[in-house]
Image (cartoon, rainbow, N blue to C red; front, top):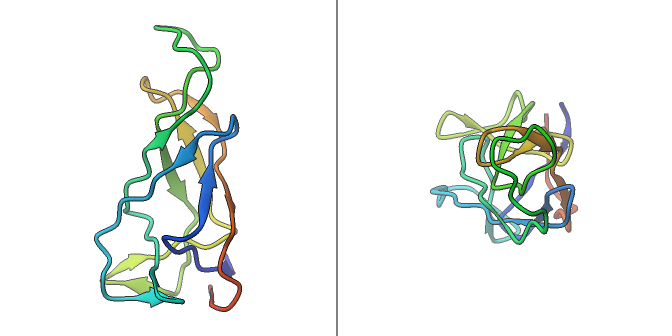
Length: 113
């Protein structure tokens, strides 16, 4: 899937407005001076406004993002980079899908397939 490479400067939000805070160990590949984000990075979410509902299948606060469909041809240390068209799922504490994350403020210069 082709798209602009996500870097540490991109804003990623859950469907309810919480902010994903990328945690990456990539220090080798920079895009516009910021580390490129990888599919294997951690993406905890802070500030999701939904109230906790223990053992409920309804909406719950988003706590993390899991990504799928990263770039197929661009790797950093053997791990695929994330691109603006990558799909993912925000998950509750019980790993219940809450909706897709939305990246914004993506750097405009470097693309990957």
